[in-house]
Image 1 (cartoon, rainbow, N blue to C red):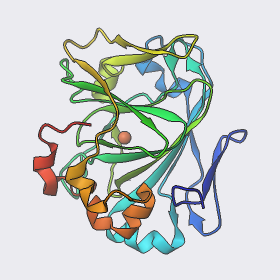
Image 2 (image 1 turned 135 degrees about the horizontal axis):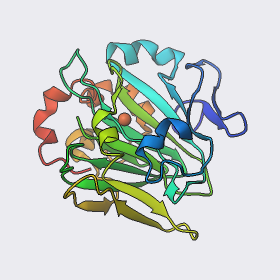
Image 3 (image 1 turned 120 degrees about the horizontal axis):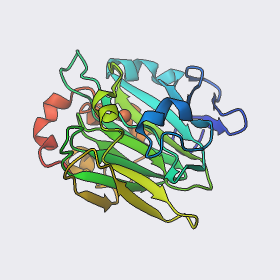
Length: 262
Ligand SMILES: [Fe+2]
């Protein structure tokens, strides 16, 4: 058991996510640098060939029924360290497709397990992206991406891998990349200097879009009921799945998404 409630580990050499006893999950998929080139500041940049390993739908066998009954799913992603040209190692950016069971683009909850991450999100992938947020998250932090917002996950430390778990809508129908790719990526590129300090370069294919750098909100609207001594994201999701019903059923909480602050 790791301290996040699921017995999994990232094997850096094999670049795979391995499961402990009674933990069920799919074979690891690996995303390569070539698969995200169209969203890079420099599409010809050099970087690690393998950017991240991903396993969607991981659970302890005892939790299968409760997760399925509540339409929840745990995904696990492990990021390589290093740089992609001048940029940090990151995903290309996507929007969750609208789920036909709910009619909503589902939100997502991240919990950082190892290393340091930036969850970058913006209100829109149209020409004016609205407010843009770079949320710096360390081990144990939770971050919510609200419905319909384009986002990417970044390894904020060039020297170490980063691993996170995410609670998702089990009815998710994949990702929409169209508007992000049409703009050559999201509205800001995360640049890193030789000493590891991070700066943001505006993507000139967008107009407007203020960047706000912050730490994660406490999301009291959703999580106050868990109290101050809450467990890990996975533990709480299987213990109190009703608290997480806003992920698959975002429309039941539509007021919470107005003026949402990550
Ligand atoms: Fe996502």
